[in-house]
Amino acid sequence: MIRRGAGRGAGRRVLDGPSSGPQRALITASFVSRVGNGLFNTAAVLYFTFVVHLPAAQVGVGLTIAGLSGLAAGIPAGNLADRYGPRTVWLTALALQAVTMAAFVLIDSWLAFTLVATLDRLAATAGGAAGGALIARVGGERPAAFRARLRTFVNLGVVVGTLGAAVAIQIDTRPAYTALILANAASFALAGLIAFLGVPAYRPLPRPEEHRRWSVLADRPYVSFVALYSAMGLQYQTVSLLLPIWLAAHTDAPRWTVAAVYAVNSGVCVLLQSRLGSRVETPRQGGRAFRLAGLLFLVSCPLMALTADVPSWAAPALAVLAVCVHSVGEVWESSGGYAVGFGLAPDHAQGQYQGFFGTGFDAGQALAPVILTGAVLALGHTGWLLLGALFAALGAAGPPVTAWAERTRPRKPAPEAPAPGRREAPRR
Image (cartoon, rainbow, N blue to C red):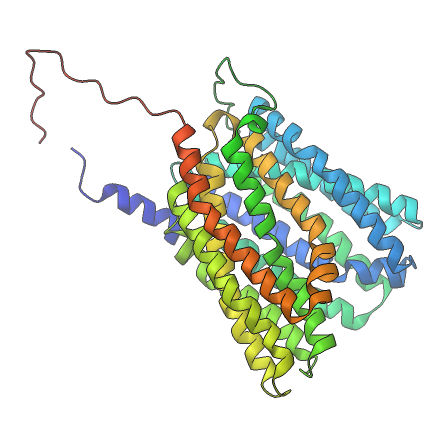
């Protein structure tokens, strides 16, 4: 006999706390690696420019080359995860990242920097593809809800790492920066050890005969949603890149406002990701969440623009208000993306699909600085309004695209009817 509410209770355990050892292990491993990311990313540019003495322009070019090169690893790594198991590929990627990160302390030229950065991005992209497939297996029947909880701890890890990096930046010596880099390398190694001990080596799922290595590219509804999600990804750098430049160049807000908006953005996401993400599980719900996110961005972008038109004492408050609205939209957008990205992918090809999903997102992030600084800033207030309208239009396309996608998915077979003349036994 099935107890009423048992399914809902099981779901709550995933949301309110990991209900299994693999879930706890994956959350812990991800948290540890993101603490390392927070340590490194906050101080990376300072290390390469002030310690290694590379010109800022060369650092930018090297990172761009690395970012674009890293896109090539997404689908191939996802296929490997589908064929040999996601944990194997993810652990291999973590090991490579530990090595490449440690190698950063040895570089002394632009060529060496670009080579190491490229290898690091290839490993990171491969890890993202395999990690997405691993989350789908560990999350069980509700991978999107589990990933929402996982992202809460990921955000928290970045915050903790960023706070640690602030200490090294204040010390501002080569040993301090070197310690950050080696700590990040160690975080990848420790995350891999935790996952090796606590996450099962899931066997690959059987693949149908029609499966192809690049079959995701023939899935037009999925490709269309990835395009929408990648374009909507401009919203991340709206807060991390565009708004800080706008506050510094176009407003009289005190400089601490930039740090305040970072803190508010991270805090809102940490507090709301699991709470709101638990409401978005199916692709259809994901499409609606995507639309709601677009509407919230339509409100937040004009508010950010208005910080240039208010007194200096009001600009910080208005910026924080705008970022609060934007951050709630970010939670809905990411939750919708997870629900659609996981829900539309065939179980046997989660690695390939997550690899393509991550590749599309990374491509959008690579283009974001050019679009935001070259177009939005150049147009000023009009640019902000157009950006908000773009987000709203992308969000509005979410429900019809996901409805189209659901119509193209194979239907699950209906339960077998009882034979004529036979009656089912009554349920007790």
